[in-house]
Length: 88
Image (cartoon, rainbow, N blue to C red):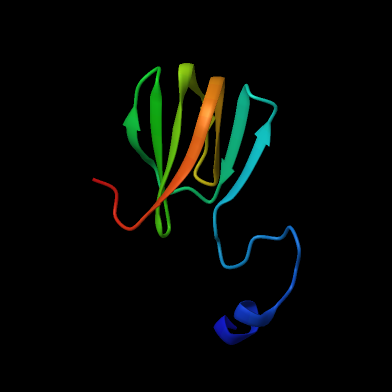
């Protein structure tokens, strides 16, 4: 299965529980296949994923809803970055 997924070209489909991000304008971010929250404030939210951390920066950030599979961040989103490796 791993060999297949490395060579597959399934545009837009997450493979093997890789994180999927959907940014809706500048005020809503959906993240699927997360592994919990590493840091949380109104200006910074770090979301742990399989291979690192998704860092969201902005103002008035809020974790709107969260399930085992997905979470939604709302607020004035200014930057979304990926930090590979273990979060600190």
